[in-house]
Amino acid sequence: MRKRKVLIPMPRSRFIKVRCPSCGNEQVVFDHATFPSRCLVCGTVLVVPSGGKAKILGEIVRILG
Figure: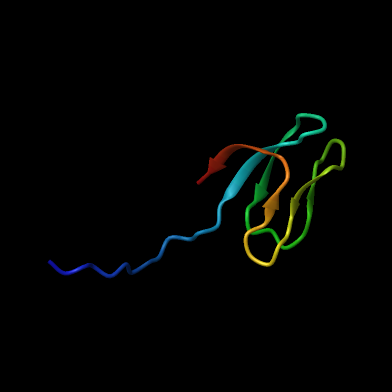
């Protein structure tokens, strides 16, 4: 059998729901973020960019998409 070529590749990036370690607020962030994402309630940094996939500092609750 021949392997079929994928016409439309699936993206490797996703949106992730992250819980803030300080206040417990849940927020949706991008896992390949280019800017640091902060908690909307307390201002704690949740995501730090690292060139490719971002470093997530909060607890991952759910992967969306």
